[in-house]
Every structure is written in structure tokens, then in C-alpha cells.
Length: 71
Image 1 (cartoon, rainbow, N blue to C red):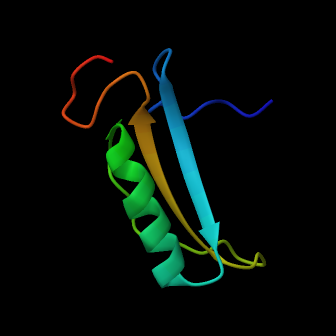
Image 2: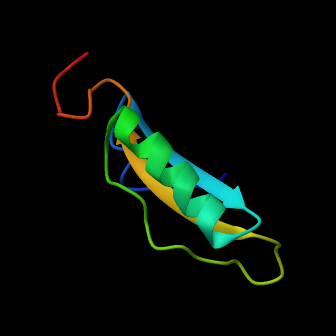
């Protein structure tokens, strides 16, 4: 079993990973999703050896609005 990221410290915390064919699409998707909740913002774009696409990850608390207020 794979352990959870240390960023996932409790209920409502999620990791969102976007995989796209190209860097502009991955960045645009992460920049669109990130502002929906209180989030870390997108990571640097990265590639995984021997896998297609480019990835970007962000962490969010889906219980909070972008300004940090509870929903």
C-alpha cells in the first residue's frame, strides 16, 4: 500500500495531479482548478521517465474557499 503524502494531513485535504500532452495545457488546467479552493498553487511542471505527458500537482483543502474561510 502506498503511503499518503505528508500534505494530506486530515479530512478535506486532496492532492490533484494533472497529466496533459503538453506544458501549456497542464499549466492552464492547474491554474483553473487551483483557485476553486484554498490551495498550494501548482507545482513546477515535471515529466516521469518512460511515461507520456507532462504533469503538475497541487494540494488543496476542499473545505475552504480560496480566501481560507471555512465553507
